[in-house]
Image (cartoon, rainbow, N blue to C red; front, side):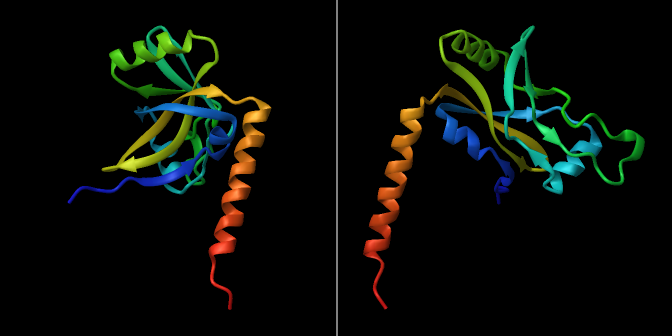
Length: 152
């Protein structure tokens, strides 16, 4: 029986601010107290982004709260976390981010077979009118759902 991924945190703001074109799975290079803190659900992906430097990919702005019982072993909550991906994928992402308007944004953190994984997305920024259009579609869908609900 395959273990289903246990999602710990999601970056809902990313779906509001960006069009997600492709998604990738990356491993996280973490310390023990960071893993324990993530298991407790004390991670925040809001305002986080990824960048590529010297052939390695890093997640910046990802806040992992210090573990309560971690004392001296706790790390800086906002330190850049190195992501573990295949070199070919990193080079592909590097080439795509050099194009106008592309960014690499963390979408969610989850565990697969005891290992912390980060789902990252190759994203293109939304303009204000795109956000308004999405909000209008969502409101219309909600009104349709409300209309189809049986009256009591």
